[in-house]
Length: 397
Image 1 (spheres, rainbow, N blue to C red):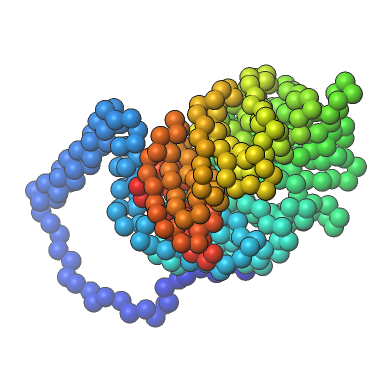
Image 2: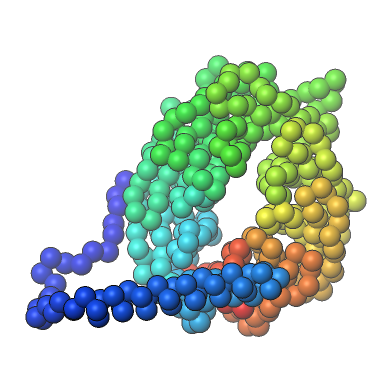
């Protein structure tokens, strides 16, 4: 694995030295006092905005502090590849291909590139300022940050990784095949030290994630209960060997797990099921014979893109709260290419436009002429990264 980073050459020309002047105590005090007053005014202004506004104004302040007012004019550039996977870590756009992972700055340059990954089916997840890149069904897994490589794992020949998830604190749950078992789950803390392992022999392991409080791991398995197929969510305390609680979803083939607030959302091809942190099923939503084309998770809502026909790209956006209750639904007559959600916002990328919605499906902002964009990444501050074939840019409402 090769790691390349842009560095200033040793022989770079240095600016001429200027005579250093030491300010007097009075001048230094006044400067410090002025800095403190300015900082206090900014903090008080932000607090006042957050108290008086509905959150959208505060998000505008956050975007201004993070990106200024011209971020949409900056471009991230990268090599076009159908196997690319995308994510965000702060101001960096993360691009994963079969052979490398890049952390790109909006100036168009690569802050860091890690090469020679060797991933046949690359998969990417981000959290806690880290990215985990792994090969679905393959032997290689890497945990990297914009500054360093934190962890490298490799499985024996003939075994593969199934999933890898980072929580917001940088704790990692890895699901893999293992000899003599139907799957194994390993948990690493925010320093990437191994802290927990569980091997399962009675059910097939398909996914896992560490809880937000970093005290438990939720393991998703396929099995049988009372003669019927079921998906089970099992909680393991990271200090105990035996399960703490189990939720069984009968006749439910969950292929992905998300979160809406404190509730876990299991997605199948016919419904979504909502399971509380105590293991009880708190709600569900059936697609009613429609086809699920895409989905996304906000802070406390789930967005679904449903169509009447299996090959359709025109259909209905449905928003559900953390109990599976309908927040709103909206038919969209234009072709939908991608959706994503974060915070209180939903991004809908159409054939030549981007529309941002609030969690109540009121339109927040829109952008016309998105060129050949095919992907969108929503940010919790209300900005969105629009991604085309070999470039991307951040849209600031």
